[in-house]
Amino acid sequence: MVPYKKMYLRLFNYVTDALRELEKGETEKACEILKQAQIETEDLYINGEDRIVFLHGAQ
Image 1 (cartoon, rainbow, N blue to C red):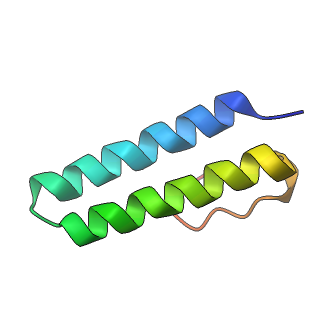
Image 2 (cartoon, rainbow, N blue to C red):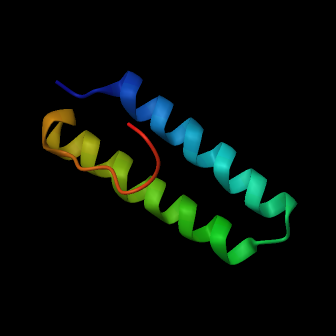
């Protein structure tokens, strides 16, 4: 089963982090955060939540 709720929450947290970095003028860091968000949410979709290891922030 695809963990849509978990995917949404992770993506929301990543976007929030990226926006904070943009407010500080850290565009490269914001881009890296968004790229990681894309990778992790894609992995959640493909593999399901039991097989993912999060690389950013708390689960």
